[in-house]
Length: 458
Image (cartoon, rainbow, N blue to C red; front, side, top):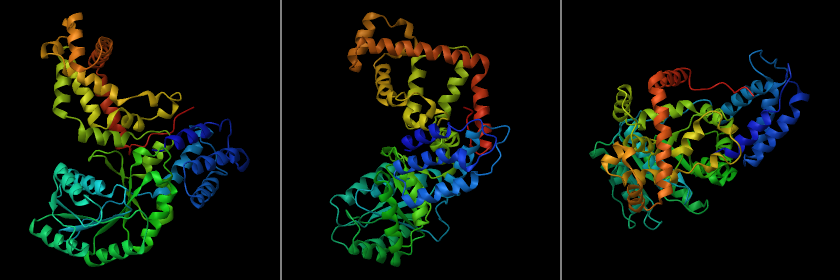
């Protein structure tokens, strides 16, 4: 998300140079480009106008710090205004109520509501150690109940059965009673959606909200609908007492206009981002980190948090100990690294959070293909344990067998072996110079500073 907006803004803000003071005259062209970039990102027009006016008011008259250049000074101002626009604080879910705490999910059909229910159940179970039950009150969409049952099993949530013969209100009230007997901490209620907003749907959800008195009522919206997402959120907010918004399918939207418009139009906080199809692809929304991504500064803090959750620490420690003893980085180790990278969302997800990726030549990031790494993993798995531990034994006939077993060609096997050699050399250097410990200390320092990198010098 935000790819095109990030490209436009970083290129635009690079243009300010050689100014000791920011004035209306020397920032006029830059502000015009910022306005155009936001409109192209499908940010709502009133939001764009207010944003540009606010940046102008903050910038005019500011003396450029001796430690920064004018572009960096302006980036600081734009960053602060983006954070204010999207809401300065991450409003966590309010779970301080008598269990089961009820979370009601609302949204249009096709917005990703049912999948988000499963993602949220997993999030609460894994990160907040809550016992979660889920129920579907969607008696209209074919297979909606079955879909949630399948997803609940996948994420380890307790599924409370329902039937298309029942009334949604009866389902929800029975689910609360059942969740109480199951000693559930949280009950997430999935509601029916429609292809468009209509009175019947709103009346049904209003009755559910009135009867259940949920602690949280979250509106799930498809980020790919652009500023329409914000307008739809407003319509739901007018009909319901919303406590927050979940932006789904943000991985499929390169513009990001919805994220910048929803808070301003509805006044409700964005609480989560759906960042992929997998059930663990749900991130808490932090406006300061998103603002950093938009401005090409990356998001180191989220990267660290993700690594802490998803990297297998035992494997990492074994590798560190192995390298410290002077042993070689073999293909088993290489495969482990590929799997760890996949667990963290793949290369694309990692690149998105690294500072300076906006400075890559056009098209370079697009050439990174996670499928290539999957292929490498399959090739390594087609080798014998002996070959994985001692890659030097792999001769021509072995390469042909490995290629056949992995459904690839010999040049693919050669390419993998060459890449492994390069990785082996790099790991040797890192282990000799203590580079890994230095890197981890540096990342820890960033974490303690709040994970907000300073703007880059240009």
